[in-house]
Amino acid sequence: MFKSKRLVGLLLLLVVLLVAGCEGYTEMNSSTSEHHDGSGGKVTMSAGKANGASTRTIETAASGEATLDATVVLNVGQGSYKIELLGENDEVTLVLEAQGPEAVSGIGWMVTDAFGDASYRVTAVEAEDVEYRIEYGFR
Image 1: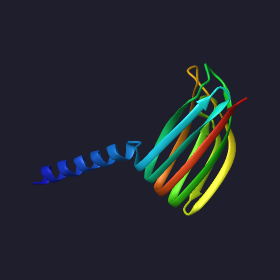
Image 2: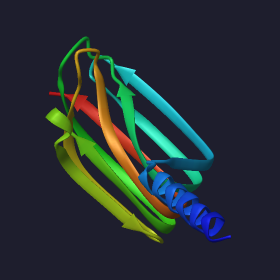
Image 3: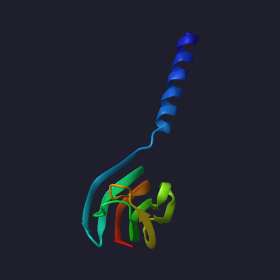
Image 4: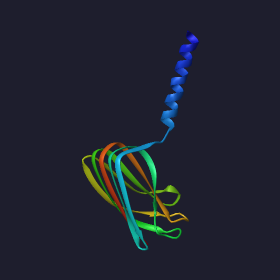
């Protein structure tokens, strides 16, 4: 009896550690649209609900490494949502966070990799009615 209780306790501890170590992100009722051309582009996202953390990629029209100047607008109905624009070596160049109901905006920059992709990170905590727009231009 003692061994089975101990085994159950160890299994529960293992499950808790595995769940805590996972980075996850979920969205419900979400849509994303993108437009890119030789001078810049725009990404628009909306989600009914969001929770967790994720790194996202923007496939720009750049043919290699480039620097992008970006304007970000974020609206959150409930909960909190954070956007971090990423520069070289994932250096955070802009942090924009809104707690619902709130709208915020900011200006930052990103860099693209050798394939022309720029990255940003999002973190949501029980966020609802989320909308954001990232407009960028090449330097």
